[in-house]
Length: 172
Image 1 (cartoon, rainbow, N blue to C red):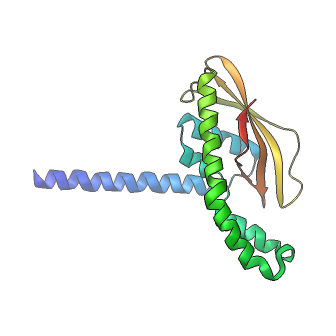
Image 2 (cartoon, rainbow, N blue to C red; image 1 turned 135 degrees about the horizontal axis):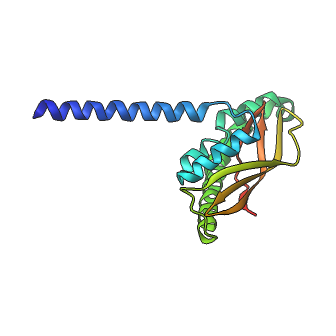
Image 3 (cartoon, helix red, strand yellow; image 1 turned 90 degrees about the horizontal axis):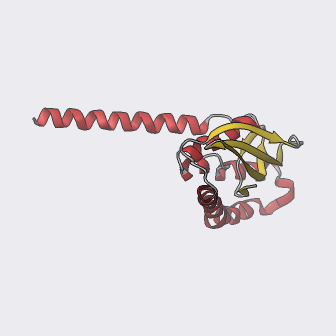
C-alpha cells in the first residue's frame, strides 16, 4: 500500500513538472505575428487564464532591455530609470493588465460569450509595426454561440519582432 502511494505521488509530481515545463516552453515561444498573438490570447480567454494572458505581456527584463538599447534617452540615469520602472511595472502595469483581462471576461459573459468554447476567427491589422519598438492597434475576431465578437488591443507592443499584449484591451 505504501509503495502504491509513493508511486502515485511520484507520478503526480512528474506530470505536474511536465505540464509546467510545457506551459513555460509555450509561453516563451516567439510570437512573430499579430495572428499568432491573437491565437494565444484566444487560448488564454478559453481557459479564463490571467496567467496565460500575462505571459503574453513583456517581462521586466524585456522592458529593461528596451531601455538599455535606448540608453541615450536616459544618459547617466539609466540604472535609476530602470529601478523606477521596475516599481511601476510591479505596482501599476501588471495589476492594470490583470484587471483589464478580468473586465474583458466579465463584459464578454454579460454579452453572451462562452469563453470556454469561443473560437478564433481572425485578426484585423490596420497598420504594421514601423520600428524595433512599436505599438499597433489589433482587433481579434472570435465567435461564440453563433455570433462574432471583436476584441480591441489598442496598443499591442512589438519589441524586436515579437508581438506582445498590453493592458489596453476591450470588447468593441
